[in-house]
Structure formats: structure tokens, C-alpha cells
Length: 78
Image (cartoon, rainbow, N blue to C red):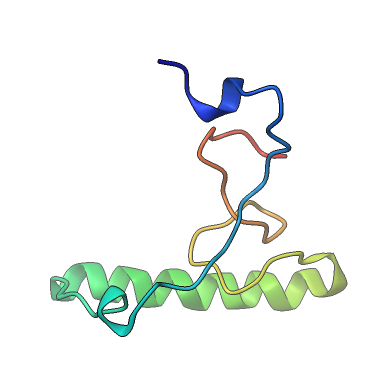
């Protein structure tokens, strides 16, 4: 079985869609240490976004490429 990346019709990119129902959007419990790391990461990313100005191309992703675009599953920047 081949992965979608081998499909000749695939254009690429990420399609962001909302969840089908309110049950699909729920909170999760995180250990305090992990939560603190994520908050720190968000603060650092906010500073990077501000410094990049118009060069920042992303939405509101938590983990991004250096230009703010979403990470793709291939692990390669596009």
C-alpha cells in the first residue's frame, strides 16, 4: 500500500478543517512541567512572530517552520 505522497494527483499542502462536532474538540490533561514548556514555547514563538513581521506566513499553529508555516508530515520545509 502506498502513502498519499506517492499519488500523482496530490497537489500537497495542508488542509485545515474544523471538527465534525463539539465532541471532537475537547481538552486534555497535561503534566504541569509539560504545560509550562508549552507556555514558554508559545511566548518564544510570539516574539519570533513579532520580529518576522510581514515575513510570517502562518496562522495560529503551535509548532511551525521558521517562517510560521505549518509543519508538513514529510518533515521537509516547503
